[in-house]
Amino acid sequence: MDEIQALFGRIAPVYDPLNDALSLGLHHVWKRMAVQWVAPPVGSIVLDLCCGTGDLAHLLAQAVGAQGQVYGVDFARPMLAQAQRRYPAPQITWVEGDVLALPFADGSCQGVTMGYGFRNVRDRRRCLQEIYRVLQPGYRAALLDFHRPADPLIQSFQRAYLETLVVPLARGFGLGPDYAYIWESLQRFPTGPEQVALAKTLGFHAVHYPLMGGLMGVLVLTRPAD
Ligand SMILES: C[S@@+](CC[C@H](N)C(=O)[O-])C[C@H]1O[C@@H](n2cnc3c(N)ncnc32)[C@H](O)[C@@H]1O
Image (cartoon, rainbow, N blue to C red; front, side, top):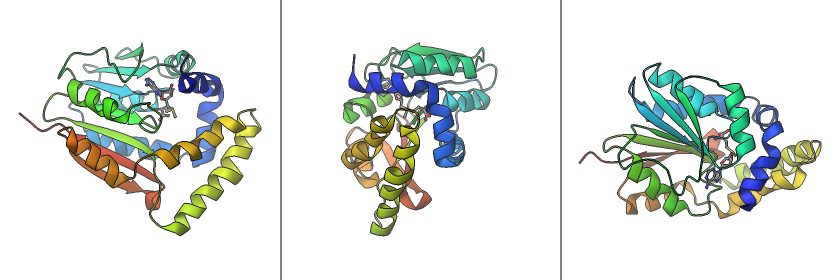
């Protein structure tokens, strides 16, 4: 099993309470913003990639309404089990799969979200290529994730927050090393402008919006209309 897949399988039972505690519930606000950036039409087909426990899929389902169709894709079965339990909506289908090889036809959806997944995938170029392929021309994707702020002061705050609050709290659940991984993965994660440059090489129109002084960010991608 993939190391990342195993990690998220382990943390699935405590993922939501920890997320709420560590972000003071703010991740719900950022997720709502991501869905607003995608702005999927009512009745459309949309994907939530790396859906985890399903928050974004649930928000997408509200946006597309009862006539729409949402697919939440994740490769960690324990995450999908939580998602199914939390959001048993008829228009959401939970799909166990790898976002680097999506089981969807070219141009088959009108919106894509990805929350805290882009930092974790093994091959970011491949991930963007897959999003480009499945998006119908003229529609958008929003990728929400942590970000490395440009300001050194905010960077120090972020490091202190992760090392003195997040990791010790996670340690209380026996998951200290798993949460120490956030800081490590962030060091390898491209900055907003680097993400935009990569997306443009694949044909997207791309903008990166920093949130919370650059502690978080949303990469908004549009596949240009033909
Ligand atoms: C930090 S969680 C985010 C969950 C949810 N999107 C949220 O924002 O709360 C990252 C998720 O990405 C999934 N993931 C990472 N790489 C993946 C891949 N290549 N294919 C499918 N899922 C993947 C993990 O299993 C995990 O559930």
